[in-house]
Amino acid sequence: MTNVWFLFFKEVLKQRDYDKSTQLDCEKQRRMNGHVKKMRFQRFLETAATLLYFLLLLAVYSSTSVAASRNQCGKDLRQTLKLTNLVYRETVALTKLYVASQGDGFQQGFCKASVSGIPDPNISGLEPSERIASIYTQLQAFLLHLKQVQEQQENLQPPTSQLLDQLTKVTAYSKRLLVRIKAFYSVLFPNLPLPEPAGGPTTLPPAQNVFQQKVYGCVVLTTYKKLLLNISKERKTLKSKVCGTRRPMNTMNFFR
Image (tube, rainbow, N blue to C red; front, side):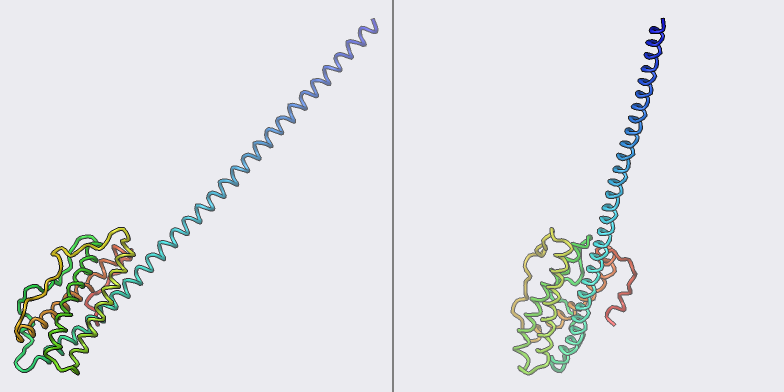
């Protein structure tokens, strides 16, 4: 009988030890699971923080790039219009000198005559790309007419004439302006090639007598001044639509 009770209590103790061991194992497993979950959550937070950091860097870089691009655009635009200002001033002086160099009887009013074949000084197009392209093609056309005026005046003026020097200077500045306009357009619209003139190649006037040549040259210079003035008026539009700045600008002060 004693042996039976002894064996019974022995089994009870073994079962209790087993239950305790099982509980310890379960507790250990729960702790391990909790630790694993905690580690996974920490890794998730670290990954999210790293991703957020790179997104912030990307946003800052993008904002900086946009700001730098706008600043460069504004700088290029100012330089282009500064050169336009110079060409305008030189053309104003050239026109006055031209009238004074054509001899007695030649009046400023002759410069308002209607001469066929002179390019339109107005800038066409709705989009900025179209208007800059229009400026470029108009400058190209006027350069050919300036060359024609230069050749005519070389036959009418003495070699030491100040008028010839001024014509050469305006033509040189105008070529520089043409190159700058083309570069400005290419940077802003790299995938849009500059179009050919809508009316085809520029046509020069047929043979003219001396008086007709004098009137023609004066009309060319007067009309060219109008084109340069119209280019200056594009500054406000280009700054807001192309360079992204919206500060108002008084175009009447541009040439002062």
